[in-house]
Structures are given as structure tokens and as C-alpha cells.
Length: 126
Picture 1 (spheres, rainbow, N blue to C red):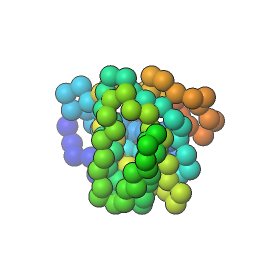
Picture 2 (cartoon, helix red, strand yellow):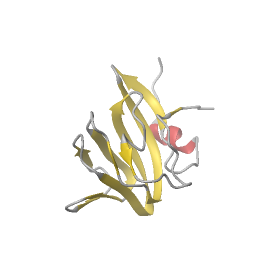
Picture 3 (cartoon, rainbow, N blue to C red):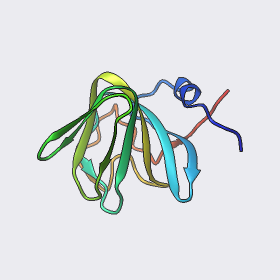
Picture 4 (cartoon, one colour):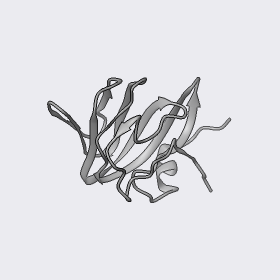
């Protein structure tokens, strides 16, 4: 049980749309990920999804609007709500969701090659 530096965690990988699990709190993963381009429309039937922009800017498209987020902003997508994260210039993002939650949710469109369909990868620090 040692502290984890978020900047070092983000520097430990280059893959986009491929979150790393920094730690677990109760039954929730605290994940960091790098975004650029578009994810895919998806929803999580049984859980909300928490996003915090660490660096850069991102958008979360909802069916009725788009939420724009900059460094330091947080937003929660309620369970069951279809959403599509994206970032034109790139972003580093912290995501909180129950352990075992898929990055593409329960319902989703076809998963593009650039999106890692995962429940999160273990963080490997040097």
C-alpha cells in the first residue's frame, strides 16, 4: 500500500481508450485513461459513470446535448444513459465505476478497432 502518482501512472502507458486501474475503493475501480478521437455510443444499465478531466478537454455526447469538460471538471453519466465520449485535442481522464465494468457498457454499437473493450488493465509502474 503505497501512494500512486497520477502523472506517473499516465506516463506509464501510451494506448488510447485503454484505462489503467490505479486503485480500488470498496468495489469501485479508480481508472486513468488517455483519450483522443471518438469512443462509441454505449450505456451502462446498472451503474453511473464518473469522469474527471485531469488534463486537456473532452466532450460527452448525450442524445439530447453535449457536455464539454476542461481540466478539473467532473461529470456523472447516470446509469442507463447513452453517451459517447470524445476529445479532439486529447485528454487525460480519471474514471470511477464498479470493478468489472466494461469500457463499452452493456449496450453499444460496433466496437471500433481503436477502442479497447476491457474492464481495465492493471497499472504497471516502473
